[in-house]
Image (cartoon, rainbow over all chains, first blue to last red; front, side, top):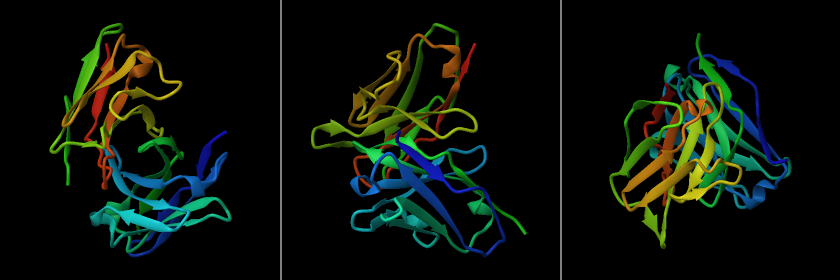
Length: 117
Length: 111
């Protein structure tokens, strides 16, 4: 079964850094682009960016370029999203998703990040 | 960047009737003969679920009461006949090029 299993909820201090994981099973991440999406409480979906795990190339939406870093480890079949200099604006659920035919056909369950002192 | 405008922001449809959701792009999302517009359904506390890809292709396992149409800048998601379980928020998304922007969402209530 194709699955994306994301890491657990995070409570982090303002100004800190957090690294979220997204472990794939049932497929090899080298064969697909993986995306990250942000959803603030009671708000819509925001696309953050993608990574091609085969070569490590990644793209981030310009508004996230100083905030987010997307990486992947093909040996563990896992993608990562690192968020830096966290503020209350970063409090959200973060999803990873697999791209097939330019659509996100399989999603992780989401990781909740709460930024609070 | 291309902006996606969904309408209405919310709608209430009677059981068994038709729900129609519009997504308008500020520029064409056509590329190489295809229209790169996707539709997702999201229920509270759950991740989004892909319904339609490339404007009109139903994802395997999605009920045939969901259909998508459109090209260029104007796209539509239809649900007919609406069922109780279709109560959710629906998002369009462009994927012709980066960024893969989402629309603002449409909340569907079943009467």
